[in-house]
Image (cartoon, rainbow, N blue to C red; front, side):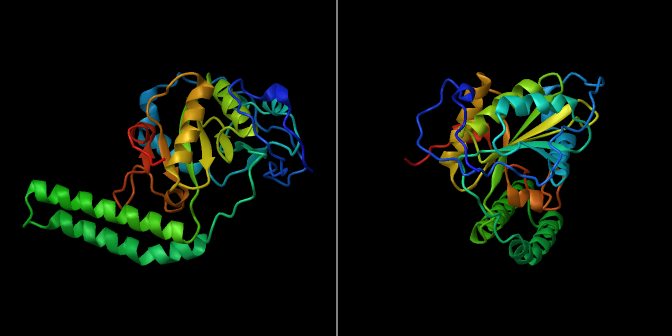
Length: 281
C-alpha cells in the first residue's frame, strides 16, 4: 500500500520533491502495534562526557538485534510518536521508523564478508602483538608502525565490506531520558519526510537514563550523502551538537567497540572530522 506523506508533518525546511512512496516503512510483521514498556522514574541527568565513554559505546551495539517496535505502514507520524515515546520504553527494545520514500536495499553478502576477513583479522592481532614486543623500535617508530597497521587494517575491512555490498552505516546520538522524546520526534519526523537517512531507531532506557539513537545511511563510501544527513540532523535540532560518531555496519558486525582486539577506533569518522573534510563536487 502506497501513500503520500501528510503535508502537516513536513519540516519548514522541506525541499520540493517528486516521489511516490513505496510503502516500505513496516519493519516488523508483528500484529500488535502497541508500545511495550512502562514509564521509568529512575532517569538520571545526562552528561555529554558519558557519551564518549566505553559503556555507552557498548550499549550502541548491544541494542542491535533486539525486539523492535515499528512504525506501521501508512501510520501518521504524529500518531506514531504519541503511541511510542522512547522515554517510556525500558530494556533493550527499540523503536524504529523507515524513510517511506526510500527503496528496498540489501544488506549485502554478510557471510562472505565475515568469512573473508576471518584470517586477516587473526593475523592482524598477531602483527600488532609483534609490534608491541619489538625492542628494535624506539617509541616514535613503534607509534608510527601502530598507526600504519591500524590504517591498513581499516582499509582492508572497509574495502572487503564494500566489495560484498555491506555498505550501510549509521550516525550515533546519545540522549538522556529527559530529552530523548524531543530529539527522537525531530529525527523520526525528518526520516518520515525523507530528509534524513534510510531509517532511524532509538533504544529504550538502559537503566542509567541513557538512550541511543541511530540514523542510518546506505553507503559509508558516500561522504557527501553522509554529510547531507549530518546537516539535516543539525537543522532538525536547530543547534550544533558536539562531535558525534559515524559507524559502518561492518564495524558492528565485527563488534568493533571502544575495547576491541584490533585496536581500531570504533568510529569510521566523526562529525567534526567530516565537516573539516573537503568533499569533491
